[in-house]
Length: 309
Image 1 (spheres, rainbow, N blue to C red):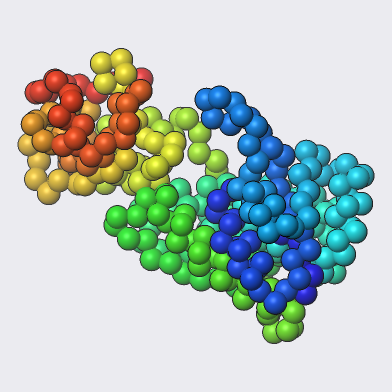
Image 2 (cartoon, one colour; image 1 turned 135 degrees about the vertical axis):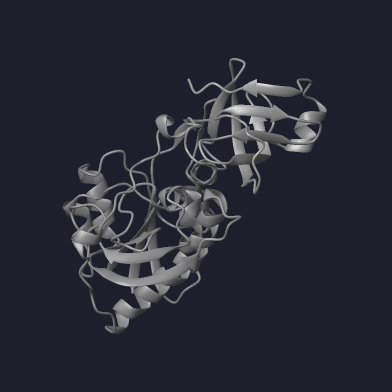
């Protein structure tokens, strides 16, 4: 089958690699335009663009899907199917072009967690299971008929980074199985049950500020969901303090919500219910560190109150 691949971030790379190594004819890739990134604002290509160029694949970087030149170039590829992983919303003029249409790999067990941040919200809500889904693309986002799914256990030590990596690898296998099944005509399309749908909206800065009135377990879920980026934070003496890894303490020392006890090798913070032991953190302008290393260069000891704004 002739397949065109659409994707942008690192999450899409295992799928692109798997497709490149398959028996299918990968006719080209579509990704986002190069953008200024980092402190130096150097113009950098997307991870998918870099891999496509390394493989010598035809590559399109449209800024506007309605550009006639882009549509003509895409049509010239004569793809039977578009495979989409972590990409922008496609208009019908694009996803309706190939004879098999377009399929998307999504990082949840649809219809749960429709939206831009399914991995983060699964962790935020304390789920113990998630997965990946391949489905046919429709005009309404993440509502198309399901083709295949694979479940993944969420471990206690998982954060958004580790879970994203697992889902990207399992999703790559699922995507290839889906394409194989479509070519062989052995897959059935299953409608999503809209009543079971939940939303996974984009993570914003408002989600990153910790409300210490919530329970220790809820805050730990928030920290896991936002680690390694953008990071959950609070304000300590006017400076942002980010938290990356914690554990819920089995016993309480009666700290009040947001009250931070700094010892020689450990930091504990009170919450609305229970306390958190801080394992990894980062003071603004400094490196991310394990707590003992952090405290070796950090002078204050005793009890302090974290600010929420």
